[in-house]
Length: 68
Image 1: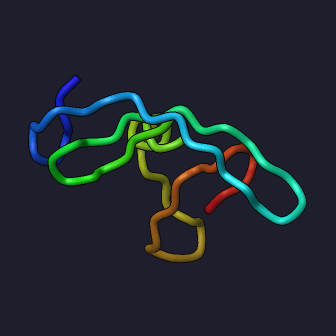
Image 2: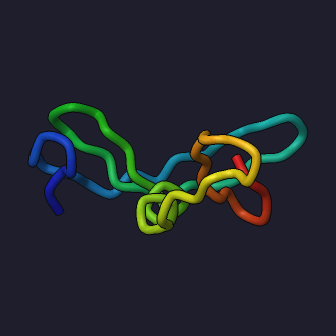
């Protein structure tokens, strides 16, 4: 796979993420050249069209079941 940013070589990167009291494994693509990481959440958010809040002009993306 090629990197979206620099068109360099992207490889599968399995990382163990440790947060407060729990750990989880993250499967992502990491660019060997520039270091850009793309996981499933990033990929989904790139496909979601931007929506506007009713009261303002700010943009936000969906993260799981909550707005970010």
